[in-house]
Length: 370
Image (cartoon, rainbow, N blue to C red):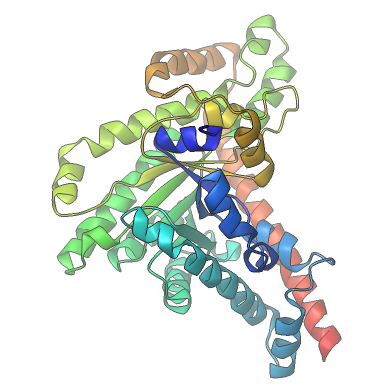
């Protein structure tokens, strides 16, 4: 019998897990999820690594921390060593998937330091460092879609580095992200790179959009506002897919695709439901379309496998309905441009806070070993 995750994959959605730990790799759980849940990739971020490395019940990092402490490593150096080892090992687990999918999937992402979110040159330099250090062709380096991140995305793509662009909330910024990718490909072609080896995804955040928008709709409190709750996230993502379709059907993209380039796939991130009143598979079953990625927390993955109802494409027929949602939001007084700017600022801050928390914990762990 076909499982819901298999049906989702058959509908054109690549299922990635939004979590990674050394224990998950070493226990064989990651390989099991590939075999039983149709998982074909993994995304990570500083919060995920912080939860893993600082988990008191996880002893898988103890020996490496002791060795790094004896070597006199700084907290930053220790985190780089630990996280790149985990990502490298996960990439090796996914190597057969990478081969079987023609190098499209079998991907694992690692993020540049959140402290560099507003530093173009620093982001570019660290993207190159991570790409070289991990040294696996199925890696994606994550760069945030801040204003400073956009030229770094172009520079990294131009060097032949595959990129996961993260923290995208608005259609306007998404258009800039696609432009940064296409510009990078044009520069890569001019430099003689094989465009077919360069891959990218654009991570469009979903549930956080509803959380912030619904807070504002609750404050407005009218019947019209209440009727719009829990609709902005899906509408925003669906219109992002429309923009993807339009842009990659254009002449500029067509010339690059003809030269061997790959489309930058939309990736649905933040797909765990924050509101317990909503169906726990909402941001999976309602965002099915060809050639997209959905990166899920394990809880959402298991819910989808258990009772997700996959009915085929739930995106491309909903563009007008999505535009009506935004017209309604404007009519009741929601400033959606402000919503997305707040979310970008908060997203960067959350990752910075997690990163600094991780630095402190690792520093304490190293000190305890010295």
